[in-house]
Image 1 (cartoon, rainbow, N blue to C red):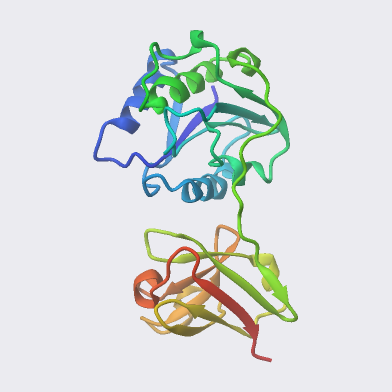
Image 2: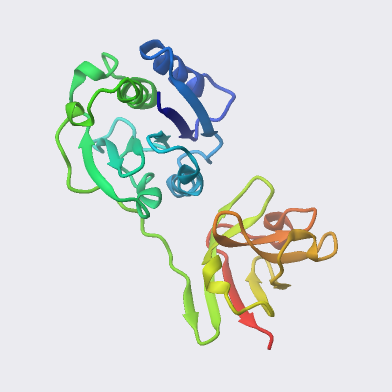
Length: 261
């Protein structure tokens, strides 16, 4: 029985995430459901896409990943299921699946048009309950993906900023801020090879310079540091504090890694 993961911007105050689980369990009482996160900022498709991509590969092969960050719910945007060599991804076709799919071998993409597998009638405002949850449940029971609707050629892709190397320096920007206030960049850890002696210039409320180190604790408490992060990207942190608050960082804040020797 494959695992079903849930990623959304529903939060925990309301009933939305729990209702999705109820629909899944009603159709497949043996389903194993894992909450990746329901705390994606409301309507932030990029943040949802990053959260899914950062975590999906650590699940067993065959896992069904459901991502619902859907500011266009009820519009003409399609609902899709994407089968890759290792997983199935389900969500609105608005780019929320795109970062995870960038490193996957796509086998097929199907839209949802077969009403037999949806809750009837689907609401205009809660497709997580009425479309994505029942499709995930039916897939977990072994229903072939091709039964849900016609095949598509591709999914919507988000335009992600790429880090740029200029000589021995690397330019990047903040693409995600986690609950600790760590600012995760688009600078892949692999780009830092050979830069053990380097600093990161950070443009927040003011310009800051922080050293490139191997851990948060490599600098005194309250001081900023640049650390190769667990997501595979460089992150800016403050030892014992919030880099976002202390440095005034936000999505799009600019970074420059430069060697000191």
